Image 1: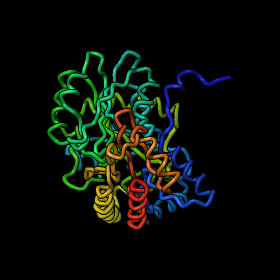
Image 2: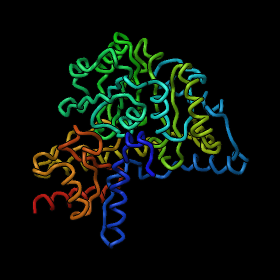
Image 3: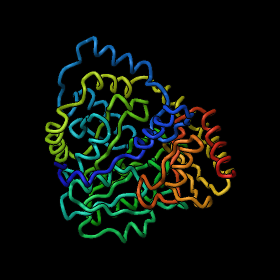
Image 4: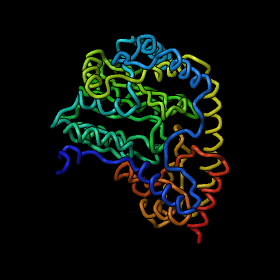
Length: 386
């Protein structure tokens, strides 16, 4: 027996594969500095945890509405209206168990065999997996290091065809930490309207920026009816294990999402939604403290990377990732990542874990202590200079 051929369209996520290898080395007594997993190393804010506990005690342990509780959806709609400057109603919001259903289900609902989906490369591997699983064709557009890992806009324009159904954006981005400039967002909106395609905007890192707030394409004129927005709680509130995300989209897409959610997950855990409501509407000081610490770590780690021979790293504008260019070392991405793990005890990801245009780069998550970041950079430099 073997699985259905459609499963071949899916790929595993590199971070978890490297984590497994790193854990095996630790079991042998080796000390590993973990920079492979993309999750904050902070605790969920205390008031959010307490809200989750209170919800359990109050009996929020049963099925909830498929699209999410109405008061939670209203709070999300108000948050989006405030932060994106676009009026949004609860009827345009759905709550999902983590961000990945908000990638898979809209793509399954929208694209068909023969359609083309333009996506950034390197990028989160689930995008291409979901597109192939739906029978559509992913069209990869390389991100340009000299443009802070935004698109080559001319190449993007040249890639649009009559079969283009969807364009995927991620800003701030995994793995690069890049933020798409506002002028590029405006141009992409004009292209979407002109060529009549939809935009899927992954904004899971929307609160994790270091300069000006990233511009959402939802904010552009004429884009509300052709944008599907993903956001959530995993990164901003250090709630990765809670599995809580949401989507904002036109009501006709909400109807399709409801069918997929009913058949796929039934609903999002009730007590988790109570915790999410507390996170969104409560004290935000923990988020501010976390981002202040990430700013300090960013300065420290990027500075040390740039002192390593053969390594050059641009200062990321968002998220908590460093994406250094390592072509000057003479190693491929996979070779260097493997040898740093096995021989230097530093777990990072090859850029190719995020697409073929990631060759020549590594991704480091600097969601780790300053001491560990400094030690990781020292180990990497010592290994390269050996």
